[in-house]
View 1 (cartoon, one colour):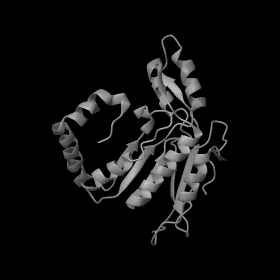
View 2: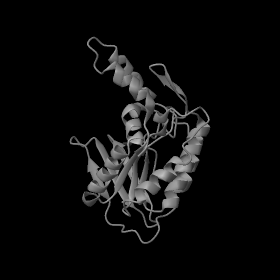
View 3: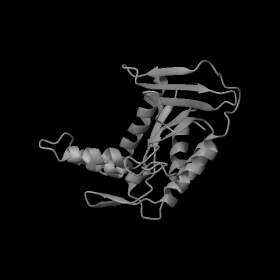
Length: 231
């Protein structure tokens, strides 16, 4: 239903062949009886849009297409837009602080317009450069600990944080926080906090809904906070 530059050859055939296009719709319809929420993974940077372009109408069309198939809730299980430009194997991908903020605002407006989304997750809180730097070193080992090709591909996610790798907030942070500081509509079921931990107990997480209907969380490693406090 959407084009993806990394799979362009296959998806272009889908676009040009109505039989394959209908097969994709049929697949979604076949899946619906077995799911409560339809999850979407949206990574528009893979489209290799020109430097000043954004898929302004793409999500309007996508959500309308899926709404023609179901009234079940949607969720964006992962999405992002890079805050900097980069290249992968000589192919340029364009991003900037301004485009990242515009993308986030555009996406959240479309989510609000639809009105039936369970949640939206950005791919990364902070840029992934420190993690990728470690991978790049391991890819140079003989034999490589990780495929150099895979590490090069991971650059697609390197600059997708709402904060840079030093923790400096970007313009998109305000857009994100202003939307998600809004309380839940209706009367949420508060219930008991959900607590999970790693097998050795060193990593712990707790999630709950406070009396204002907002998500509250804590993540600790060896007793120290490892995520920014919940708003």
